Length: 154
Image (cartoon, rainbow, N blue to C red; front, side, top):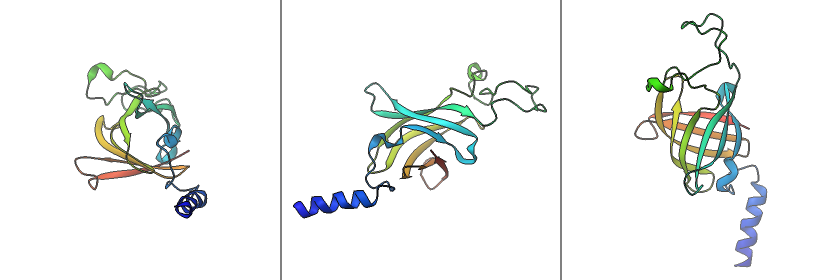
């Protein structure tokens, strides 16, 4: 038994860069989204503080370009594609865009939802921590293979 425990500890030590030994809170903190368009902060949430959520804390381009097609050039970006008209003037910075994630084994979180402010759509989502600096976020409709994976970095 002692050799088994020592072997597991040794495996964790050698795989420190991997997710095999990842704890549920290892995703907490700030993550750059794919193409570094934004930074998302992942934090604990829920009534018992047992879920994981995320919000946008910064944008690479926080304002609309001067030639914005909807006449908002130079103004801070808002959630203008939200299907709920009452939310279309909410700023993108600070937007709550992921919620409901639960730990699902070493280096995995499942049963979450993610909102895409570019399309105004909500998708089912799961996440996998590939190493301490790389998080794969997969949004999908129905089943996981009908989706898209985005790689986020610390």
